[in-house]
Image (cartoon, rainbow over all chains, first blue to last red):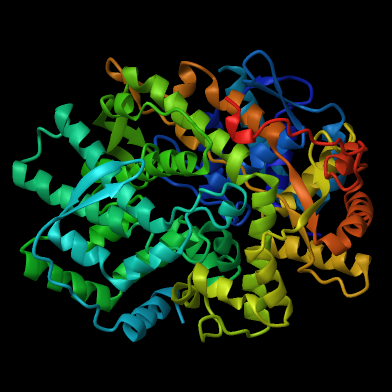
Length: 125
Length: 506
């Protein structure tokens, strides 16, 4: 089974509890957190690279992945400002069933801790 | 052979000693969109080299002129436009007193380097511009350099061209002949948006490749103007709002190009214009179909060893030896490639067979839709899908008769950068208005993927394509997927009434 970089981010969204609670998305915070883990676990984030000359670490792949989540409506943005993001109902179960089996225990633990960290950070934005 | 050596060898073999033409006086060049501008003698000497002149034969927007007939502009005009835009940015920084700390001689030296970087910034572009980059990325050396240099294929090739020995020698000759001091190494860094001393000079690299770069100013105005798709851009207002300052980045504190509060409105215009250019021009279904034809032509020339301009393409560097005209010359003959090329010239494009979007897929199939979309990340997987489709259609259908197309969306990262200065603090654009979120929502709603096919296989590509995607990704298309592809006439054609000449309409 091919592992896509999108799958990593889908699992992180799932671990952020986005199906149960919408969070105000903050790109700077989100990218900076992923960047930190990218440095810590380069093999897990092998497809990613970040430009470091901007005011936050920027990855065009990460931007494409998030947009793809929005195009597929897996990730919904809520009115009036489209700032709040939420996973579509039933998505967590699908991610657990279809995407998680492609990752080992250790990797899933890392993705879970990223998700929890982001959940905490974005809840307080 | 590492890409750097490969490019070096290519430049040495093809341009060995790059001719230096002695230019007696500066030249005035008149450019639609950007106006009249004086170019210095040494700049004309560089512009007159075959490496820059070849850009006249590389269309800025691929084969878009088959859809927007006046979009005939090339990388060459764009290059000159970027020189003018970069100079205007520099002059604005001077007028806004943001360069007062630099001695006069240093200001002049940097400006000459910035202008030269603008002249050279697209030197690595290949036939039909971005359309050929899809195929370039299929070469391993480009793939690995892409993540190492964090750059696009044409930037990587351009960067290594400037590092080649022949170019270094040529610029030494230029510097001696015209008594100037050009820093070729730094110029090549600017093309990648980098500099040797980012703490002091990141703003200079930003002028060439950054959130508010000269490239963007020219291409938005030029693409909109020549396509006949009018977009509004308050460039003058934007320029008076530019400055430089030290800001925090992951690399530490860097002096970057920043924006003052009064520039927020024109900045919003730039971001909106980008999104609209994608939706109106770059992602126009016919434009995407034409891109797919160009990709097929290039892939066929590689796989079948068909000579282009007397050359068999074996590496990414070989793309630098050919231009649009060389490709279009392949339209005579009996091969598959010849036929696609003839069709490209005669605007017999691939046709829509299936529309893929959130509005053509059943509402509950989001994960399946996501599975299709993420294949777009790897051209090899898209190509595999094309082969499966061709097999399912059967007969003599090949992967070059059908194309799964999942276009990339525009990057909007600049809206989140903390570059807008108010008082002593820096804010991102979204702090004032969640524009990026609105535009992303706009993009997500406008986005369309397609299955394209030749007229012969159009109907089969619809049924087999739907069958393949539904089986493989567990989704279900609704009626719009076929209806919007306009395969079947949904209404009886109406008789057109010409009661007066169209030109008399006011």
